[in-house]
Length: 231
Image 1: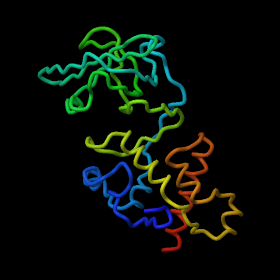
Image 2: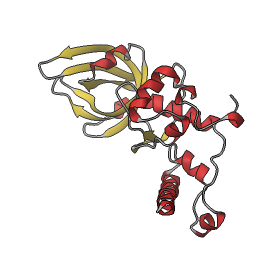
Image 3: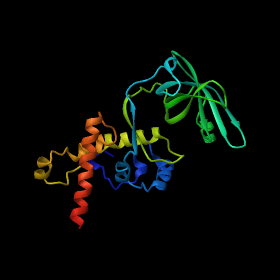
């Protein structure tokens, strides 16, 4: 299907990177169509504009780390299920710890390359320094280039990690034609609003903080404008 045959009412399963199984999981978040996916806006953003070498990891500091996993193990206590692994980059190694996420054992394999956003803390369960306050992480494909910048964090379920959301929505944005305007040009010009198509793209993958602010302003205005029209 070319972008000129694109329909926002198409089932979400036809977005590249989704498919039937992930589409079924997305239904739990009321996402059934391509339009539903387009308007599944991020709940937060992470500044991933700069990587932190593992050798520079410091206790109580946040960082973005990229490395290869090894020595992956699962340990259970009466209250916790603890996954431990070693993350290694060219500068050194550090322990990574996940709590009560034992389902990750099916996904984390030795040799897996990941990008992780987390805080370095002292790990009293395993001893030593560990990245154990993890905000998000993504499994990188072999040879995948690291894209730094402001990254969206989407409302999700255990079956769908942030890498799946980001990939699917980026593929959707790449495939879709420009979003048609719904506001009269006079209003857009008078209020210095950015185009709706630009706002839809920047709200997901903003180039910078200023463009994110403009995208939020445009979409917030559209929502209030449509509510007022309905009233």
